[in-house]
Length: 289
Image (tube, rainbow, N blue to C red):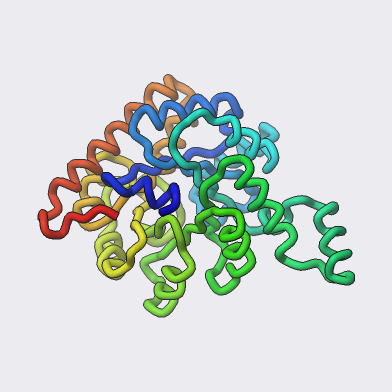
């Protein structure tokens, strides 16, 4: 069992998301520690990329703040290696950044080893290797189609990282089967169509998506729109093994007011809601992954 899977073993997992470097590296470390004190089981730490197509305005603005502050992939990995928390960290970023990792030096090495034609695997392997060395436990790459994920899957297998895929309400049964075959750690269930962003309710799509994944052995964590303990309760009682919360936390970071204290309090509210949801599951259906 991987570190990510183990995070779901005893109770519903809380997976909070913040953007690395928003507003600075030391602040991010403080916020991660606060989230863990509040009950986080996994930290999803965003690696900023200039074209975050899966993210809504809240997280786009956070990414822009981090990039404006000078955050780079190497800074990100150094930040992760310096985190003193006892929960796994999963990196959420976009494929172009992974593909380009290493820059011209990796490109020239790729061309030399392949007789002049660069190979996709070079930058991918360089990034995954560096991520593993830094202590990253898994990757989420929302713009990478499962059909094109072979090089990254191989690199993750070689360096011991999980590769988490997102299943949307519109994902066909055929693609769902292919995704669950390639995924490891957990399956990220997109609660609603569109981009990320805090919402006032739980979409009906969430229940349908969880029902479609009932036969999967991987833990299922629901994200996109989750912002309150009541949401976590409803989602877990519907069959999820965990919840992912991003924009509601990034809003707190953006406020700049008592951020660490409020993040810890919000994490505690969400974790409590998830635990309440587990208690509402009929006993014969309650299982541990």
